[in-house]
Image 1: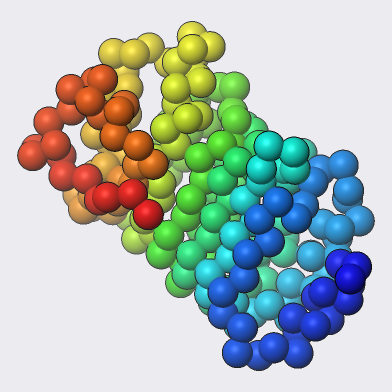
Image 2: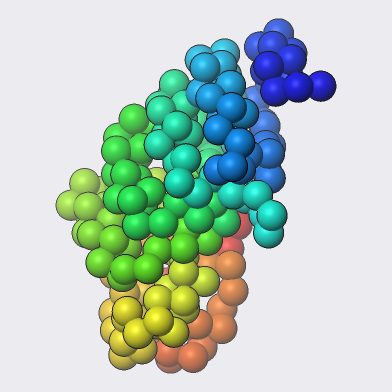
Length: 198
């Protein structure tokens, strides 16, 4: 079944609410991403979507096509874009994405692969200013990579974790895939409670 046939079939399933397209898109195949974008309005009933990448397939530099598609899915409550390699430019568009998805309650994004710490810091600050109610997974692997690249000092990671956990007016929205970073950086979990991983 080709991409167009798949989305034509999905459009005939009005009760479909959970959809996984994990590993289905790759930046080397712009055509499949355009099919997704052009049919995104027929996915308005979907409330949980995974378009996560994997070791061989990632959205990467074609993220803007996906961004336009997601804006047509206003009922989304859960979105997984992990391991998508959307980079600095992709992360910088996430506030725009959140503004367009008022019902979004969970965003999973680790594996964006930025090479500048500033993009995550700016994103985090925009969440704090906007009092976003979306629970956003802490990008543990991306932060560790930035540390290894010398983009972020280890001593600053504690502060970053604390700020991330206090997004949304002091309510903890931090979600971790692992706990070892917390242990390594001796964060006081009683002072800064953490929501458990998804």
